[in-house]
Amino acid sequence: MLPCRILNKSAAIGFGCLLFLLFVVGNAAAQKIVLMPMADLSKGENGINLGFTKAVETSLKQLGVELVSRSDVKLFMARNKVRTYRYLDSYLVKKIGAEFEVPLVVIGTIAELQEEEPTIGITFTALDTTDGAPVWAASVATSAQEQVRMLGIGEPKTVIELVRPLLKETLQPLVKLAYQAEASESRDYQLLGFHLSPGYVQGGQVVGANLKVKFLGQRPTLIAAESEAGKSYLQYDRQTDSYVGEWFAPRENGTYKVDLRFEWGRERTVERITSVASFEVINRPPGLTMEIKKGVKIGQRLAFRDHLLILPRLDNLRPMAGWALEIKRADGEPEVYEEHEGDLPERMVWEGRGSDGAKLANGVYDLTLEVWDLAGNRSSDSQRVVLQSSTPKVKGRITYSGGKAHLNLAAGGLFEFPLTSWQADLRSMKGQLLTRGEGKQLPAQLEFTPIAGEIEAYLSVSGEDLLGNRLRITRQKIRLVEVDEQVEEQKVKSWVPDF
Image (tube, rainbow, N blue to C red; front, side):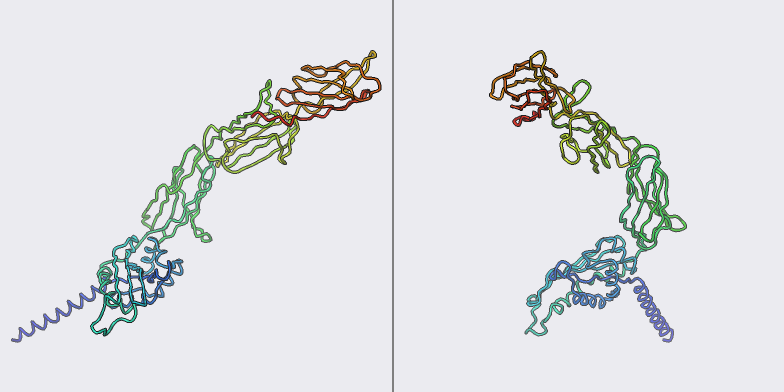
């Protein structure tokens, strides 16, 4: 019997050791998890319910699940500006895993809650901190009417008491997940922005790069920007919490895509993100021409009386940084200058006015349109035009020779183009016609016989120039002595520009 007793004792010891090893192995495989504060939609979109959060914590601990402390979770939320789980994204889930070395994050939502007649509906979701994806979900809903006790003994008085018996059953699958899951060592990152400045350059100019990125766990040893122009390592700037660098753009025209290259550790493990940004090299200036409409070609000159339509033309479409229009008199004195950002308009109208809005005098003006692209290439085009918005003035003067009186008509004032036709008549103060004439050129002379005793007469003149401007003077007084009189121009009020 002795050997048998010894054998049974050894077996007992072996069984006890096996249980111990299983206990140790089981506990070694267990991982902590993070429980986010329970969201409570009955309190609004961002409402939380700490009472139910504590109840869920208690149920998980009773099931043997270890939790990260609530205070540590709150500190993480404060540091990362997370008000509720609604503000979680996959990056923050992975960051929780890296910071607390946990494989799971559990979030819960109270979708329905009534205290008067205890009713509650809750949903749970577990997220894997490796990739931020959901790996488990469950829901529980109950009410006091569903849990009627015999003789009303032990009926729940609060919603927490109502739901507590169901929490363990609902959360039971998390025990297996918590023991099976493993917190991975992540080299994940969140790319916040990669900015190249300028995005359009001329060959040989400097391109600057600014990278904002958040890393989970270990930061890369080196970060580089790569393109056909080569590889440029970026340096960390503590003040801006970003990586910066620069390189010279290639000489050849074209679009150059830029990749990001992360290098970890001495072994220089490389991870690449392709085509994160791009820049364009433009060496050729924009081919600009300026087409002008609504003018009249007179000889080699372009003239107008009312307005000009300016139509810019570019031979290669590309984003423009800005443009400017300058108008100067023939002597170089500026009258108009306008500069604008962005692309050229399809059309512009110049009504012969200066920058102050006042109508400019008849004369010759030089129009220059300039445009520059985002790379700094510039192009311009100029054209000379003649503005004549009023006819020449007409001077009337009475002279005497050989005992006869003569009406002398001559053009005066500022003008580029003379009258092409004119009609004039001179009448006495009583309306008697003294002389009448017409012609196509000035100066001209009309002979007449004055009425004795009258020292003044009425002069009327009408005419038209090459641009269609019309002159009309009605009953202008003129002295019948040798004194120069200038006849003022009177525009026809009923004339409408035929455009």
